[in-house]
Amino acid sequence: MSDTPPLIDALKTRFGDALLSTAVHCGQYTIEIAADQALDVMRALRDEKSFRFAQLIDLCGVDYLSYGISEWETDAVTDEGFSRGVSGEGPGRFNWEGRPTVGPAAKRFAVVVHLLSMDTNMRLRVRYFAPDDTLPIVPSMTELWSGANWFEREAFDLFGIVFEGHPDLRRLLTDYGFIGHPFRKDFPLIGNVEVRYDPDKGRVVYEPVSIEPRVGVPRVVREDSRYLQAQNELAQKG
Image (tube, rainbow, N blue to C red; front, side, top):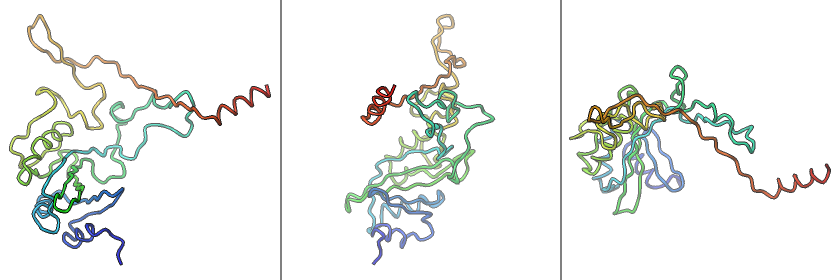
């Protein structure tokens, strides 16, 4: 008898090589597919009786730049906090020459879709990567689920992922004149420009950002009787 969950077996049987990977973690089923097959696979997941994932719950973008690379040095941490964080140059604060690179993931930008089958009470996470990191383009899901419209606009606005076939792909959360995509990991945490109203010009103006970069240093709070006991013993010896 196979230990593979029935849903994963059914997906492998139906889609074969179209499934690049499958995973089950904490009861959550995840599959990865190629972007150029996303529409066909999604249509089958929605329409075929074996699956009936009729509802798209969520769609979001992911930036895998520096994925798996930790900014914090935790091996030598003390009760004074993570000292590396003071001068750290992780995502969002770095010299351009030493900017983060793509980690173990083969591609940088991915789209993750969460589906729900109300007939079978099953949930499925589907992920597909944009083949080009420079100009990430993936197919739009709006022809299958109209509710994907604003989800895709949000991913376009924040990550710069272009959804081919979207009926009205515009920014959704940032201003019309906003420069860049703020959820990309190489986007500076202090931003590129700031906006203010100029009373002399009688209009809103854009200027280079004037905020000084700053890094918050987390502190490690250890309230553990073992440490208190050690301190008391040292005090008694002294």
